[in-house]
Image (tube, rainbow, N blue to C red; front, side, top):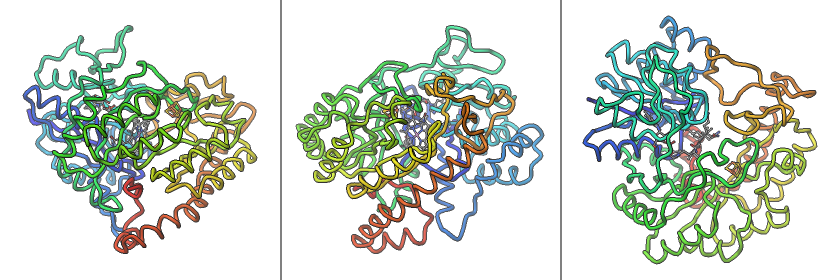
Length: 499
Ligand code: B12
Ligand code: SF4
C-alpha cells in the first residue's frame, strides 16, 4: 500500500527549523516491519517556495478563517481553499497514495490537514489517519465527526501505523480510535519506552530544504533524549503524565554518531521540553560523548536551576553550543501565581547566563507576556529583565500567553482566575492555538487578546532593535552572503545562528 505521512503547512507559514522527529521514527519503524512510508513535509516545502520577500506562490493563510475552512469541509464550496488544496496536493505529489497519515505539530496546521484529507478521500479514496503531539494533548474526537477521517492515533503511533499497514488493526490496537467507535473508558495515549525507539529516518529532500532555509545553511536533526519535566509551570502541558524518562545514554551516543554519519547533518537538537531536567544524566551524557569522541554540536530547550560552572564547562567541552531557555517573566508575582519554580534568583540567573556566554554556549531567552491578570507593571518587570540579560543573549523571543489544552491553567482555570469560553466539537477554531477565555474580574477575551498581542509586539520590537541588530551585525561580519540572505529572504526562525 503506497503510504505517506504528511505535515501540513501552518496558517502563519511558521515551519520547524529542522525535520520532524515523529514521522522519521514512524518511517524507520515501518521499514523494520517491511513497509515503506514516505514523509511529505508540506510545511518546509511551502516555506521554501515562499522564501523570497517579493514572491509567495502559496497562501496557507487561507486556512486561518474558521468559517471558510468549515464551508469547504461541509460543502467543498470555497474557491480559494479549493485552489490552495489542489496546489498543495501537486506540490507534495500526493495523488496516488492509498494511506495518508497527517502528523499534527501545531493547531494552526489542523485546517489545512483536514481540507487535504477531504480532497484526497474524494479524489482517490485514500484512507486517512491523524496523529501527532497536538492530538496527544487535546481533544481529538471532533476529528472523527468528519466522514473523510478514518482513524485517529493518540500518543506514539508506531504500533497503530504498522497495524493499519498490515490490515491487522482493530479495537485492541494501542492508541487507535476509528470512526464509528468511541474511545472506551480505560483508554489512554500510548507511550512506548524510549529505549525502543528506532534511529529516525529523515527524507534527504527535506533535510536539503531545511538546510537551504537555515541562515547559515546548516542542517539540524532532532533526537529524543528525554520525556517529561520535573517542573509544573501552570501555562505548560508538559508536566509529567507518563513519568520522567531518559533514553539510555549508550543508545543516545551510538545513535547520534550513526545519525551524523548517515545523514551528514551539522548539529543535533535534543528534543523534548527540558534537557537539563536531571543534571546527573547531563553529566553522564557529556562524559560518554567525550569518551566515545563523538564531536557534534548539540543543544535544546533547558532550565538553569542547579547549573554550576563545572557542569557548564563540561557541557561546552562535550559539544553543547546552544540552549533555549524559558525565562518567562520578570515579575515575581506572576512567577509565583503560575507556579514557575524553575527560575533561579535574579542574581544567580544573571551569573548563569554570563557563564554560559563565557563558555561559548549561546543562549536564546524566551519570554511569555500577557499572562493571566498580568498588569502593565508586571510586563515592565519582564522588559527590565530582558534588558539586564540582553548582553549575554544571542537571540530572544517573546510569546503571547496562550491557554493551552492539557496545561494546569486549562485544566483548573478557576484557580488562575480564568473563565474559558466554551467551544463545542463543531466550532473548532482552525486558525488559533490557544483556547479563548475571559479573566475573572479582569479583561474580556477580545480586550485580553489585543493586550497580549500588543505586549508581544512591543517586546519583540525591542528585542529586534537590540539583540536582533547585534546578531545581524555579527552574521554580516562573519559572512556578507548571510546578511544578503537575511535581506532578500523572509526572516526565518533558524537555530544555526547559534553555531
Ligand atoms: C520538539 C518540539 C518542537 C521543535 C520541533 C519539532 C521537530 N521538528 O521535531 C521546535 C522547538 C522547533 C518546535 C517548534 C514549535 N512548536 Co513544538 N514541540 C516540540 C515538543 C516539545 C516535542 C515533539 C517531539 O519531538 N516529540 C518526540 C517524538 C518522538 O514524538 P512525537 O513527535 O509526538 O511523535 C509520535 C506521536 O505523536 C505519533 N505521531 C506523530 N505523527 C504522527 C502521524 C501519524 C499518522 C500517526 C499514526 C502517529 C503520529 O507517533 C510518533 C512516534 O512515536 C512538543 C511537545 C511534546 N512533548 O509533544 C512541542 C509541541 C508540538 N510544539 C508546540 C508548539 C506550539 C510549537 C510552535 C508553534 C511554537 C511557536 N510558537 O513557535 C513551533 C511550531 C513549529 C511547527 N510549525 O511545527 C505545541 C503544539 C500545541 C498546539 N496545540 O499547537 C506542543 C505540543 C508543545 C505544547 N505547547 O504543548 N517544537
Ligand atoms: S515550561 Fe518548561 S520547565 Fe515549565 S513545566 Fe513546561 S517544560 Fe517544564
